[in-house]
Image 1 (cartoon, rainbow, N blue to C red):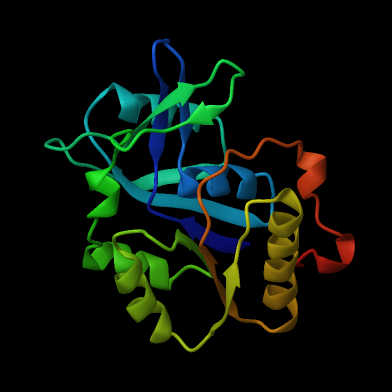
Image 2 (cartoon, helix red, strand yellow):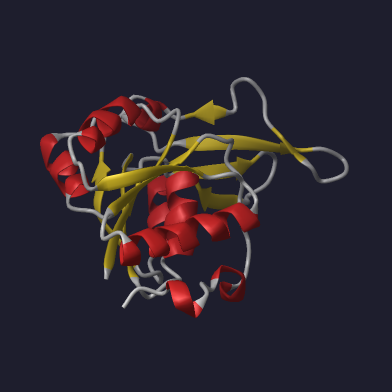
Length: 203
């Protein structure tokens, strides 16, 4: 089994003027899709407040193969949320004050969290995460991490990235660090679209 950790962005999209909420964030979205592969042990590492948004996020992954034991609860902070607006045509847009995310943007990893990351074979993080520099320092001290992958928002690239992970893990016996530079996109797809070619499946 391959140990994969995704961090740190866990958030809720709050649709203005409605009761609709959607759990998301780069780390959560990636973890949900990775959990569809039986070869991965998936964990998410992040922080939430002690509020209804946090409960909504945890409930949304309660039926997934995702370890949430490394999500810390910070009682004095608000769970990251993004107020989402819709045009008359139903397209999403955001305002300058839509994002409430200090709990993510200013997150500092503690030593236990860094030690946990070091034990993982695959690490996923987005470029503008507050703890990005910590992760880079941590990763560069581990010579068995072999590659940095730039994940685009399209399904095809995500498929290729997963395939690359499996190929490297099997043939190079190393660790992989995934980094995403682009803006968050909600990915919706069937398991079939993420099924890896059998020749790349890890034993």
